[in-house]
Image 1: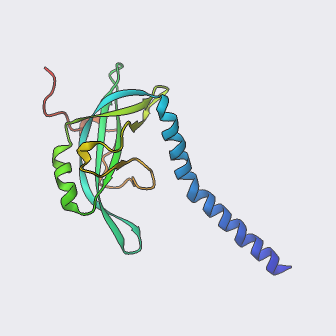
Image 2 (image 1 turned 45 degrees about the horizontal axis):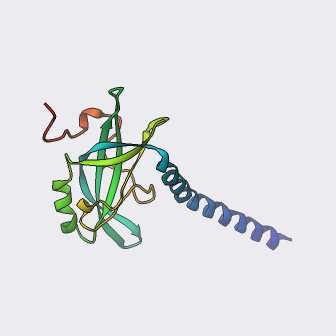
Image 3 (image 1 turned 90 degrees about the vertical axis):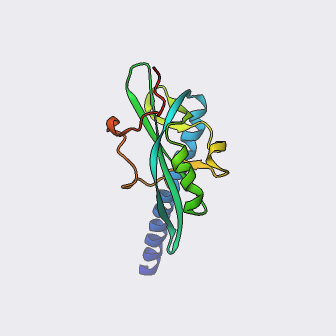
Length: 161
């Protein structure tokens, strides 16, 4: 009887780990699907950093982390983050320098504007790469600024007058 109980426990543990692992991508997929009915708005891309992200043991890729900010009619600023993965850091350096201050179309949830997603992940400005907002790939760290501190947002280089 003991081996059967042990096998059951191992199977249950494995099932729990797999459920936890797959829950985040499934929730993200559902969020992207729901965003089709959200409202579009133009946001301003904020500056960011290039960092190296480890996927597996010994496998790393350079990633450009950027933010975006938009303001609704109520005057409250909202922000979001995105990541652009590259083959090498040199591929991402021009994007790091050229993207801040440009506008990008995002979709926001009208019932909760703190939740927003890019409208198009394959923007031509991303030099043939795709942006992502998948939580598994967009790992918060020291390279991301806090979305709760509006004073850290980079303003557009050509503010409206």
